[in-house]
Structure formats: structure tokens, C-alpha cells
Amino acid sequence: MRQREAVPFGRPRIVGHELDYIAQAVAAGELSGDRSFTARCHRWLEATCSSTRAFLTHSCTAALEMAAILTEVGPGDEVIMPSYTFVSTANAFTLRGATPVFVDVRADTLNLDEQLVAAAVTERTRAIVPVHYAGVAAEMGALMKLADRHDLWVVEDAAQALLSTFEDRALGGIGHLGCFSFHETKNVTSGEGGALTVNDPRLVERAEVVREKGTNRSQFFRGATDKYTWVDVGSSYLPGELIAAFLYAQLERANDITAERRAVVRRYEEAFAGLHADGRIALPGVRLSERGNGHMFYFLATDLAARTGLLDHLRGCGVGAVFHYVPLHSSPAGERYGRTGSAMPVTDAVADRLVRLPVYGGITEAEQERVVAAVLDYFARATP
Ligand SMILES: *Cc1c(COP(=O)(O)O)cnc(C)c1O
Image 1: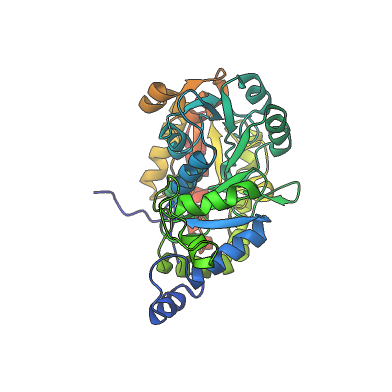
Image 2 (image 1 turned 30 degrees about the horizontal axis):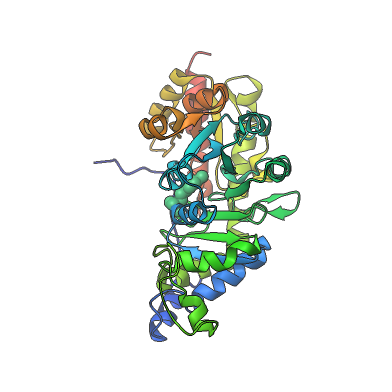
């Protein structure tokens, strides 16, 4: 059994009216999806992302699967994405028979390197899927221009990026489609949950159908058609109303949640500036507390051995620190279903060196102090 950590990596919590709203939904007899709380979540996301339409889903994974259907990728088609990402970014497109083409990331943001993306475009490329790692924007200006030139779809994996911006535009509202996660580990959560933002009006009607099991149910209830029937492929992507009720209470507090987490990240940045200056660790190439949304704090150890030593030490101190990702290009399924579109020096190095520290709303001064002390203590003992 895993030992209980004194300072866990994350800790979900109630931030406002979650339980009241769930009670309201039950009292109103609204349990299945697309009722009043779902509608409120949709309007919140549309306003925040300046999206044509937003749709709650069961997860970001589900939103990515909807995006793969809507972009009509299939066997023989290629979709360019980072290797340094969560599996769902690739798996959603692989399910449609398309080939993920993995490209290296920039060392400063760990997001898609736009020059390598340009070099990886072929006749078969249909879409680009930028991931906004740690809530820091990928190079959306360059990527949208490239997509425009080659007539490609852009699907933002904005799982980590709620309330982050690129040149004052909300992430998830810039590509043709955006995909959000409300998983327990994200800033704003409903346990499991997600959303698809549709920013290209051409895709709205089909998105409704795909999300409703391939039926025209939404049009039928609007009175836009007189038959409720099977009209296209789809699946059941809409969550029930209890999830939406919980989520809406979190969305109402999303700005406060972001500000609080940014302050936690800023404290780590300040505490470890000395280690960075001494070359014992490398802080990210951008200020996560400014460019990010407080989703994550990470730094890079000098190499794999140093990271392993540090993580062992932190575990011993009861501090829940973690690393990720196993790069998709070297994962078993990534090798089987995808291919690389560039060399991967940054991805491979980061995968061995990255360390994430606890960031959550409600982390106490004492808890954060304990994390900082444990890290400093490790480097005070370890010979450089
Ligand atoms: C969390 C995450 C996902 C998956 O989100 P779910 O809601 O759990 O499906 C996808 N992509 C990235 C980059 C993530 O961080």
C-alpha cells in the first residue's frame, strides 16, 4: 500500500456551491445531461474562450475523440503533435486510424517547436494538435499561419490551459477546436470531466450530432426537424447533470483558483532561484507563474540519476513529487501506431529530468515550507 504523504501531490476540494448545486439539480429532477447546469457551463466556456459553441464531455479524452471525428481524419492521414504529452492526445486520432506524427518540443516552453512542425508537414498531414503544457501557450500564431497555408485543422489540447492566454486570446478559443479537462488533477474539476470548444461555425451542427450518439436529438428539441433519428456516426459524449452542477460551482471560482495556484508557483520560483543560479537545477525557460495558469510547477534536474536521488529523498520526507511523461514516440503503442517527424533531443532529455512539486488550492504555508525545505535539504547534502 502506498504510504500516506504528509504533503500530497494534489488535493481536491470544494470551493463554493458544488453541493448546493447538486442538490438543486436533484430537486429539479434534472439528472441526465444537457439541462440547466450544463447550459450554464456552456455559456461560461463560450464567454471565456470566445468560442462559437462549447460542449461538456466526460473528459478531455472524449473531447479529443470528438475532434478526431469532426476533422474526419482516417487511415493514411497524419496528425502532427508533440511526443511529450499525455496519451489521449495521440490515442484519440489513432482510434480513427490516423497516424500520429511526433515532433520535438521547444526547450523553453516544452510545447511544439513550430519550425519542426513546418518541416514535418507532408501531403498526408490533416491536423496539428498543439498541447499547452503547464498552461503555457504553444506558438499559436505561427501554428495557425502554417495550418492556414496547408489547409490543416488545428485542435488545441488545452487540457491544462483553462484561463491561460496567447496574445490576450484565451487558449482553447484559437484553434478550430479546443479540448479541456476537468479531471481531479486539473485546476477546475468535476472529478472526471471535459469540454470541447468549437471555434469554427462549420463544425457546430455536426458536433451536436456526434455528441448525441449520431442523432439529431438537439435539432429535434429545438424544433428544427420533425424526426429524431440516426443521422451520422457518434457516441455518448455528454456527462450527466450532477457533474455539470459540481463543475459550474468550480467555474464560478475559476479566477480565484488560478490566482491562488499562481501564487504557490511563484513561491517555488523564488525559493529555487538560488539552485537555478548555481546550476543545480534548471527552472523552466518561462515564468510559469506569469505565462501559465498555476496548473503546474516543474524544474529540471541535471540528469536521471540526480532526479532519482531527489525523488527518493522527497518520498522519504513525505512530499508527493512526481515526474512524467514517458515520451509517446518511445511508448509501445506510440511505436506501433505512430512515427517520429523529427529528432527528439529535448523530449528525451526532459523525460529523464523533469520533477513536479505539489501545487493545489488550499496548500498551507507550512506544507509549502516543508516541500521547499526538503528540496533545499537534498541539494545541501548531495555533492554537486
Ligand atoms: C489531463 C490531460 C488529458 C486527459 O484529460 P482527461 O480529462 O483525463 O481525459 C489530455 N491531455 C493533456 C495534455 C492532459 O494534461
